[in-house]
Image (cartoon, rainbow, N blue to C red; front, side, top):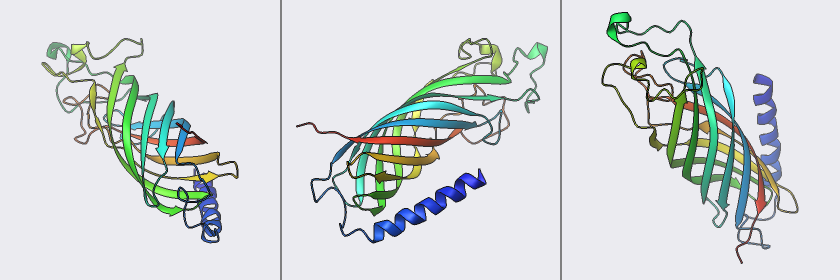
Length: 233
């Protein structure tokens, strides 16, 4: 991971240097640079919550997006992500009594499939016709379905949670990220993005009241993407 981050840092420095030498002030206003891009991304996700207090196991996702490229500093982005996260802790111990006579036995493994539909506002730190470096904040709808090792939904398994504990499988997400795009002469681009989905739920792992963590579950992601210019004319 350190080698990857160092390589990414060196690449960004090189792209930034080239961007400073670019005679075009910014893309989207000159030379008929495309104002809309379709994105296809491959994503690697890792969960943090009650079963795993750090990002440990990575799973995959795919994403589709539409990036509007009209302005110099602020651009809109619409995205759809479909994937999964997984977590396990055979030694998980609850802070509450969950013995045989309690009626509760928390799960120690889960795999959650999810989809997220979101809008992001991207702030461009650097923007030229060949390179964009940005930070982004978004809001989205996040739907999920945690399952056990037998691929059975945990939502209806009431004995895995505290008595009378229930939850909705749809919540709000507040994805926060940073990334860059590099565009070739044909305006096709490649990019990288990393960030957190910032889910507003405790139940990606089906555990909350029997857990020992007060913060909401979160998902770290790394995304590699391709951008293709599109026109609606």
